[in-house]
Length: 119
Image (cartoon, rainbow, N blue to C red; front, side, top):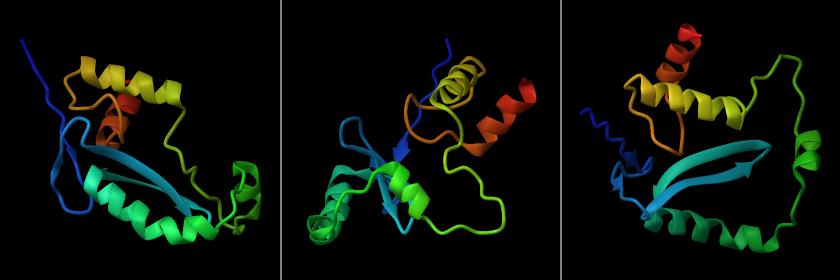
């Protein structure tokens, strides 16, 4: 029997995030979308720090945000690393081939590269 364990690590302080004790937090700023893995306490700290700004901000649709983002003459990489169907296929392939990958969160570039090479 082979058992692979994946740990989610808080990107801010390096602590291990237990199940139900945090996760990935998404936010956008200046037209860029970010994700960070945080414990519940650090996620609450981030939300608290942003709360005064969020309270005064207005909601913007995704389409409006994308069109309002500054354009550059150089080609830009997609913010997303792939579709959710492709991401699920990579997860299933990685798990079947002994790579440490969780059911959620980011998939390491090395695993994506190995998946692409195996196709």
